[in-house]
Image (cartoon, rainbow, N blue to C red; front, side, top):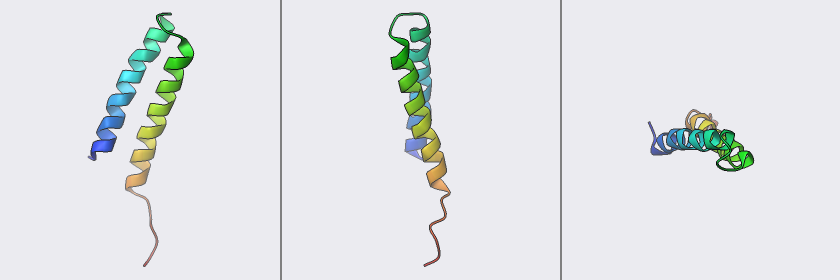
Length: 57
């Protein structure tokens, strides 16, 4: 696996922890939601970029 995918998975786990802190009212919930969304978006884009068809040359 690529390093960017591993970093993305680590970011998802960390941002999920931040999201849980937001649900417990330690931090604003919108911060946790935004971080979780962005980390999932980054990770999915890294998974999608690996098998992209680049055309015939």
